[in-house]
Image 1 (cartoon, rainbow, N blue to C red):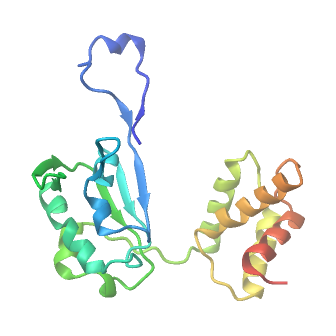
Image 2 (cartoon, rainbow, N blue to C red):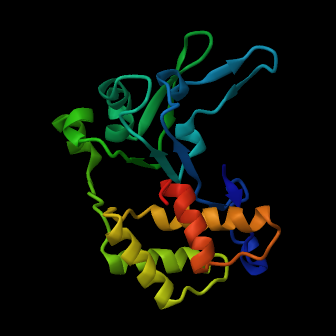
Length: 217
């Protein structure tokens, strides 16, 4: 999970070679997360432990997506994180039953579309520190997201296409979602790859993506 960054040649001599400069990792887990996934997993045949996600995301971001939809109770999962969040350490169990203490230095993030009152409590919220409520974007924000995502593929989006897209949302009475520009563009990309064509964002390809994503006529 930790990608090495190449250093300029002139700075190589000045660093401690016991350390490696890395790109901060991003580890994302979702509804598949189990409580046992937060402890060491011992492989008897290979005779080694697989690192837990707290260590895989060290010095980076650990994102627990779809929080509250795991197969374990949300409060049970929160209780497991209280010590790492409060003291930045965690206790892991070896196969012998011995406990070891490891540092936890990452940015822990929870994302959910459920009511926070249903999946958390005041004690945990105090330790969380920052909370951000993401509501539906404005038309201007939606269009900006759409343009930025299209630029990843080197495509400039015409104003008329975005206006037609906004009109379609209004006509079908759909709420704008921040994730939907990505979803629509990726379907246009799939459409182009299927027919072995250069990727295009046109009214025709957008119509195919829209009907495939929303199931509307």
